[in-house]
Image 1 (cartoon, rainbow over the protein chains, first blue to last red):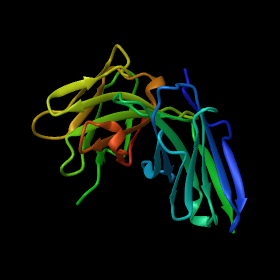
Image 2: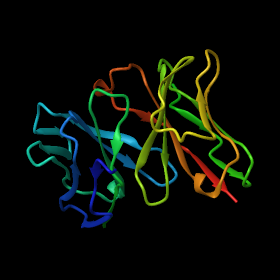
Image 3: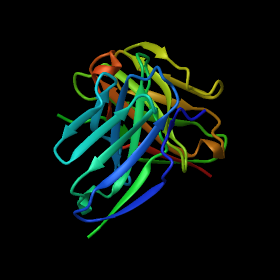
Length: 111
Length: 116
């Protein structure tokens, strides 16, 4: 019962170009969404979040877009840098006690 | 101001042994969450604890798994009689408050359990 799905296991992008990572969810009760970044052998680190009352949140090179009607969110990274190479997880929550995570997308930024 | 500390980083156990995973939350954080990441999967919620209380254990397997967060000391995730399917990365996270949507988590670096 995967309530949060990341259908692209991997993505390769040239340095300087835009990276777009996608995430779909099934539970319409989710009202808070986050993106985490994970390097090998480390724990996930918080990147950016968005609540359901917004459709866009921007933080430097990172922008998250939320389309509630489509139950879809995306993370845009522009310009992409080699240090952005990592696994990106999207996560969703309602007022409960847990986040539901996707399976991750491995981003490789090619210098 | 240390982050979330998990130990050991790597743990190897034979089938049937016990595994004990420790997590010390960030200073000032009183809420602890345990997640498990199986190979090729995302992180799956296991249990949410506050000091001396289990708040939500809906993600914990019904048998062999237990968790505690005592008044003093780290949170412990205990797996009895481990099997090969328990091999995974176990992540602990902490937060300062219980209103989840006000905070992200801060994760530790994880404990990689290998059952041989």
